[in-house]
Length: 264
Image (cartoon, rainbow, N blue to C red; front, side):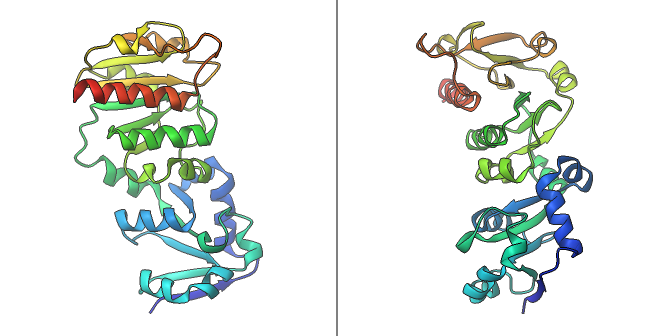
């Protein structure tokens, strides 16, 4: 039978940890933990990685409405039940989705890195919007790339908003912050920058290498020159001249589609 711990005080240690995980990238990185917000994502995570090293949290309203569901899904687990007022301080999902979990990001990355060749990579430079970065991770997972490597100039790939934007992609493809300059420099394969105005049209590229790395930058600012200097060539996506540019995740979606299409 699962064990229940009711929490209503803002002085509670777990509550303070949840607030830190929601707000602080530095705290998440130091603790090697992340906060998953929403029942759908929590269940998706548990199906893939199990319940080990997971703290399950629900709102009091969720617990009152779905006690049998919790008993079925977490028969041997400890569940922390927060008052609705406290729960809203660290989570955005309510009502039927008011379930959260603390997970080990190190455990996720270790498991996802097993048996991966790291031959198909995506390097992300300076993307600050967590929704955009989440969409990039979701695309990498959907097109079966091996890893997403994020520059220090980008937002945190393990923020709750980025995880929501990834729609489960974080549990399929390994993603982490890294010194992408060093890794890009030593990557043995085609290193391709996606550009708004440089290089040939991606539609003219008839084949891609088995080992391919795409480098993408923030919309507006683009890729830093010191990183652009490391790529083998650039590709662009032709668009109507009355439109300045595409969203970075939209551009990547087209590039990954073309990558897979030419290899089919």
